[in-house]
Image 1 (cartoon, rainbow, N blue to C red):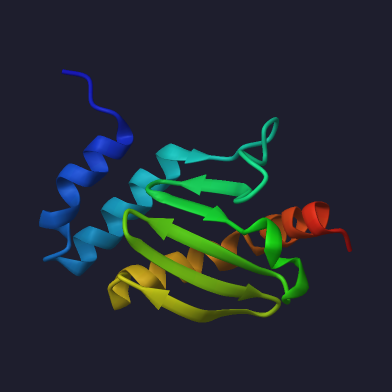
Image 2 (image 1 turned 180 degrees about the horizontal axis):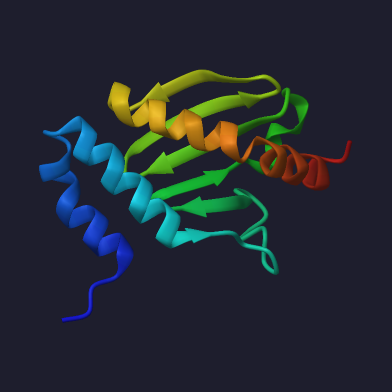
Length: 125
């Protein structure tokens, strides 16, 4: 049986969440194997440009966000978060556990240069 990386992640996440060390290790392995950077088609649509997909997370901004400081929205299923990009800090979140929010913030920090570059390309410097 062939299983996509996303399906595998969704299947093992509930068991792994009970074991923080296993959860972190599993998440790092899965993320490293399924990171998808959209290079040719960086923006999926005009209203919610997606800049990055990593595992189950979609990193995007709204087309109307240009009057705010540079930031990124992150979503997974029904969970969302908003991070300022310079410096990286959480602005608000809904639905993420504290542990998962920490992982998401680390991803934003790791990719902050790319996210800020995407912001500037879309909205102008």
